[in-house]
Length: 164
Image (tube, rainbow, N blue to C red; front, top):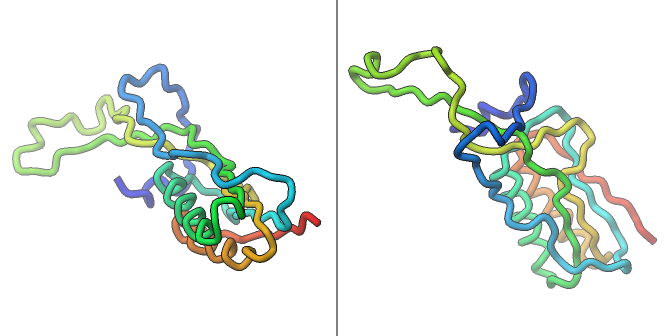
């Protein structure tokens, strides 16, 4: 299953987990990391600029990339938070592609699909990751967000807001 197949949100989001026996687990380990405090100088936000559906493993990869870069200055010098939660169930109707498979599969008949993953639907201008940093680590945090934006798969922008 490729992420490009599920990038554009089409149709109604399917979120009814009670009807699916093998529910996929979210790969996101933590939603916040660092040291929560009130004495940070800047707030950084990673915003998407178009309608997109981001899979849970891409969100985790972006979070890890940003946190890894920011934690080079120390765990107590930043606080980051993942602002989206993957609710939408992704399904795939796998087809057999070997010789003689035409006698085994049913094509589009009863093509509900098997749950393969989770995704979050985002609108333009919605925040994916939010981070609070000290002024000495601002360039490091921007660098981390730039690396994280490459994991998301759509055009993003970084908004920097001064807190003091």
